[in-house]
Image (cartoon, rainbow, N blue to C red; front, side):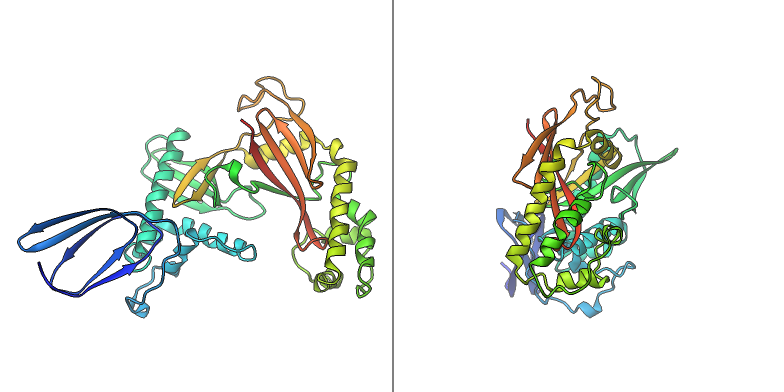
Length: 381
């Protein structure tokens, strides 16, 4: 057997078959959780074949090469960004991390140089294989005829209800499928939310932001004598409260003094949510909610990343409380009905074997900015 210096580097986060030839030169071997080993000897050369698999974790950085000598792809993206697919983000960094993941998916066709990266190449190859598998699944499930290639056009933003157009290029042109990317779940029902609506969305006779201003905002301000900014007029408050920035001095001071008597302030906000749901929950406009679901979910395919693979799922849309048997495109036969309030902050509605839980919460600092409905799908059968 040949002699030499063998360096073992342990890394995690992907699964593939590694072929290693042990020669006189130094060898760098990437080993993960070992599944099987096969040895063969031919002409004095030992070939070691390892089939490996590992849990999804961030790889430990090992300085095996000088990064300054690498030629980055035209996109200017760094190969280490692939780790966003293999580690969770914090609440504070969630939006930025998801933006990176979506940018990667929209740029996969330009990132072939990353496939051979010494540190991250295996993770890029895993992502490419998972993507190709998901694309084929979507094509099969949505009856796409034989196609020559696929491309991605990103569509994220408030003007759209989905993240990207997936285009299948066929002889007659292109067939488009709407894609929504989600991280950390394998099905829509496992997501903490699949839809978010601002509290001013008109599915109640009185919206929560107006109710809060009329009955609870002064109670919140009374908790803290240091809140000296004058009260905003009702019309201006309702126009500004669904923003995500604190440029208005009134909201800026609320945020800066959020920590002062915070528990007392939180009780006021919690009481306002419960009082609102008790007063207006039963009068929810189910037809309005159903229409919003239809508009936002129609034709949308969820591409969910979990445990090193993409999972494809969709969500059926209820047709409203006055729907007739078999009257919609999905053949939904049962009406959408109001069930009641859960936990003092969540409305439950049901359509057949599916419940929708509408959690009323403040997205940007409790009681200060951007009250919204966080909507989750719960499959009951």
